[in-house]
Length: 458
Ligand code: UD1
Ligand code: CA
Image (cartoon, rainbow, N blue to C red; front, top):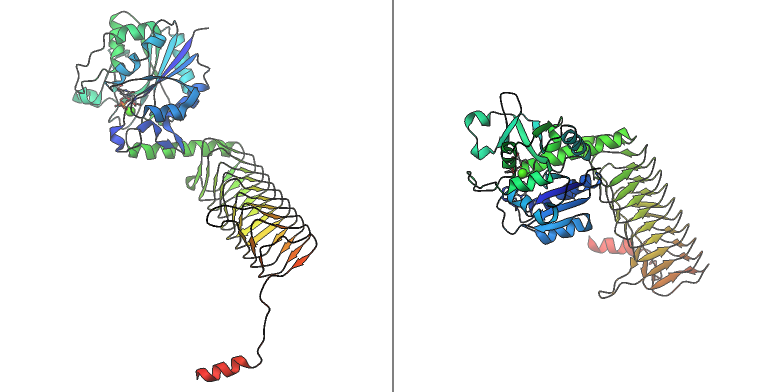
C-alpha cells in the first residue's frame, strides 16, 4: 500500500469575494467551503492532511480543528509557493499527495478516489483533474499536444486568444508523486503576468525531466467549480442544495418543492418524512420517520422524533419527541425538551424548558425556564414570569395541573400535582397539590350603570 497525503490550499484572501470573511470560510449550505473539502478528504483514509493557511489562519485552524495539520504561508506568492510550504512535512516521504483547493466545495471523495486510481494505474508522476466547461473564463486552460497528451496549463491572464478558446480546464485538483512534486517546485518561477509561483507549472518541469504526466477528466463539471466570487458562491449553494435534496429523496424522503427546501449537509432524515416548501433544516439535525416539516419551518441543531408535525415554526437547539404537534407560528428556543405527544400551538414561545408527555400549551403563551410535568394543560395567554431584570428563575408545574387562561406564574414558583389555577391569576406563592388557586381581583357588577353612562355621553 502506497502512503497517501493531501494538501489543501487555503491561504488566499479571496479578494474577488469582496468580503471581510476569508474566502474558504464562506459557507455553502451552512458549512464553510474548506470544511466541505476536508470532510471529503477524510473519507479517503489518508495518512496526513495538511492545510496551508495564511489570511484568516486562526479562524481556519479553529474551524478545522484536529481534522488537519497546518502550515502557515506568510506571503501569498501563488499556489506553487503555497504547496512548497509543506516541504518540511512531506518532501522526505515516499507516496502520493493529492492537492486540492479550499475553494472547491463540491468536489466528492468518489472523484478524488477515481483520480487517485487513474494516477496509480497509469503509473503517472503528475495527474491533473480536468473537466470540460461551456464558460472557461477564469480557469487555467488545459493545453494538449498533437498526440492529445497533456502538455501544459496556461492561466487565463497568460493565455493567447487561441488558448482562451479551450474549454477543457484545470480544476485545481492534482495527484503527485511526492518526490517529483517537491523537486519540480524548486524550479517553478514567477515569470508570468501575475508574478506568482504557479503550481500548474510543475507539469512542464516534470515532463522535461522525463516524468510521466497525465490528465483525468471529471465527468460532472458541476463538481469542480472553484468559488472566486459571490456569483459562483450562489451557484455552489444551488448545486449543493440539489445534490443533498436528491440524496434524501432517493432515501425515501418526500420533498414537495426541492427548489424551495434547504437541507444542510449534516442533517439526517428518516424515510417517509414529508418536507413542505420553504423549510430550512440546518446544523446537526435529525428528523424521525413519518414526520411532517413545513411549510415554512426552520429547524437548527435539533432532533425531531417520529410522526411529529412542525408547521410554520422555528426550532433551535432543542429535542422534540414523537407525535408532537408544533405550530403554526411557534418559536422553540435553545435547550428545550419537548416530550412525546405534546402539543405546542400558535404564537407560543418555549425557552430552556422541559415539557413532559401529553401536555398542551395551545395558544399565545411564554414558557421560559420551566419544568412542566405530564398531562398538564396551560391555558391561552399564560406566562412564566422568569426574569426580574437581573436573574432568571425556575417555574415548576407538576403532573396533571390545569393552568387557566391568562395566568402569570411569577418564578420561582411550584404548582403541585393535580392543582388548578384559575384563569387570570397572578401566582407568586407555591400552590399545593390538588388545590384550587385563585389570585385575581373580585368581580363587581353595578346594575344599570352602563345605561346611565351611555345616557350621560349623549
Ligand atoms: C487556480 C489555478 C487554475 C485553476 C483554478 C481552479 C493556479 C495558478 N491556478 O486558479 O489553473 O483553473 O485554480 O479553481 O494554481 N492559495 C494559497 N496561497 C497562494 C495562492 C492561493 O493558499 O499564494 C489558495 C487559495 O486560498 C485558493 C487556492 O489556493 O483556495 C486557489 O487559489 P485561487 O487564487 O483561487 O486560484 P485561481 O485563480 O482560481
Ligand atoms: Ca479559485
